[in-house]
Length: 71
Image (cartoon, rainbow, N blue to C red; front, side, top):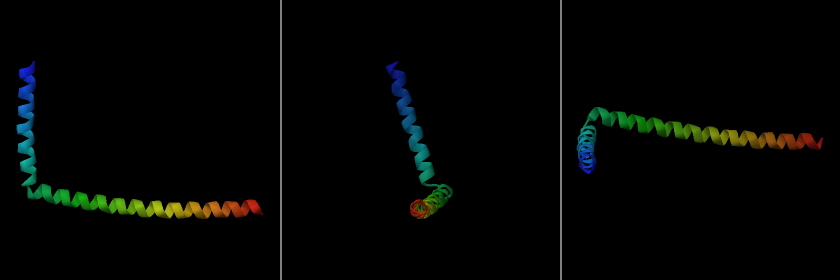
């Protein structure tokens, strides 16, 4: 059992090194990674903007409800 576990770990390490080095040296993968990172930044910025807008709308709604209750 212990020998099988050791061989699995060695094989896993070797495969990991090959894959990581292959991707790190691939211009296609690098372009993909840069485009993906840019898209994630854009979506995150859009989400933050929408969250701020929604927060402002909720504050306005709360103020409107308070003034309606006072009438």
